[in-house]
Image (cartoon, rainbow, N blue to C red; front, side):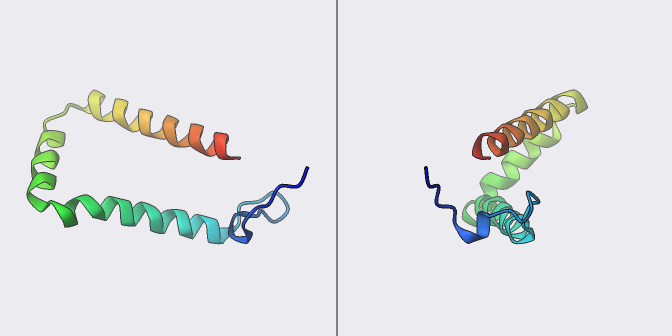
Length: 77
């Protein structure tokens, strides 16, 4: 079975290619910047709601984000 992998996603000696890391970081920045760019007032309202959350709620959402990201990375490998 032949698997075609784009050159940017190939690992060198089973180590993460640094280009993939920088590409992922750039994509995160683009996605994070879309909401405040497209709807600044909506972003402010959302941010005010986030500020009202207590520490436990913020940690829960952070943990969910970490687990979802880790699961996605594991699934894509």
